[in-house]
Length: 303
Image (cartoon, rainbow, N blue to C red; front, side):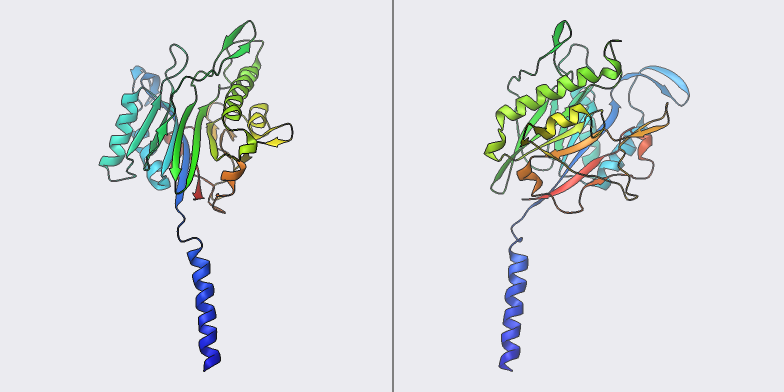
């Protein structure tokens, strides 16, 4: 009887240690989603060419469905139109009793005439770091900057301060015949953004940050490598996301009938340690490609 009581006490102690050690942890789901031209533009609608037409209602409903099925705490958005369209999406999500966000951020494009912007919706408070950033770089005979800029926000979860960098690198559509698929431009954008982050958060300080968004390139490309490592310093680790079938593609180009992985989550080594195992996913939801040519990517972190 004494042995039985002693065993129960030992089992109870083990149970307490196992569950109390993580009892104070807060799980945060972070997602990145290119919502494909959530703006007014000339477009094909129901087989007819329409000028100055907003994103069709059917596509907007599918976008909301994808977000609701993912249910992120933090949603980084690419290809958002003017701030009024972010407000529209935010209001529609809250009114339909879907994923209710309390906070938002929007960043205007850095080049004149840029219609596609970066945005963020969040259930938890943050500080938007909107101080001027020098992201300029030499490009052939002149200087350029990342056309969509860099949306930077800071969170405090538990005792941890951490930053999120939302980006959208240059697409493969080229403006110059001497830069096929805009590969040089995209690499220079990545390098400029990487250098800004590395200067602000040197690797030896063990920073907590996440770089995510639409990189418009494959995982072994120069733009991705710029963010992962400099010489012997590991800057970030790539979070391997996949769908239920084990596929890694996040973008479908219907004109070429091709699939590619363009959307990534990159975590600094310290933040990578907080990644919840098997939580990194690609949302292959029903009809999702009728809302956007990109699929949502997301992962959970324990703070």
